[in-house]
Image: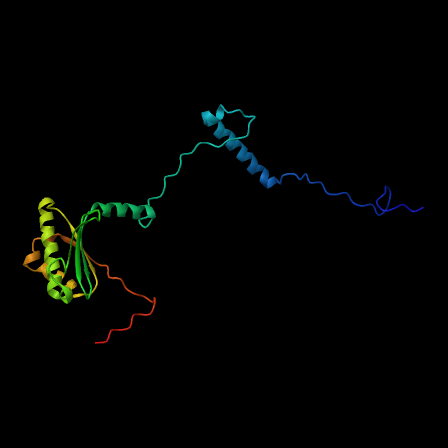
Length: 211
């Protein structure tokens, strides 16, 4: 009876699986030995590591935390700090809303609360006269006079001028500030901003009125 493959004495015996226990290559043995010696030497120098139980897993040395990099000027924190700094410069507001039918000037305190308001009707102009240049000029003069009274209480006040609309009152305010009526206040105007809204797209415009 012929012997089966794999049995003892068989000419076709299956070779044994190779062992997984490989010896450390000679070129790596020296590196491991040097690493062990340096680790042992480091543990002997450090008193905390020297007192550590050698039977426990090894621990690393305590290194100081790296210094954080300098802040980026464009980071959010830098932007917030600039906003806080700019908020310290408190401005009284002079708002001029100039439409084709009327001119409205409003004086606000540094917190944005309205202090005084003038319009063509308040200044004594009625009907279509409220949209004229004279009404806008009178509103500007009244607002400037109120700022002069405020300057007596706060000599170092700063004024921010906000222009809204393209009516005749817009040009009237500019002329009033550079004339004799505004010579006491024009030096306190530190900022001029145009807040007129611009229509981009949107719904269809209203049909133009017949002349």
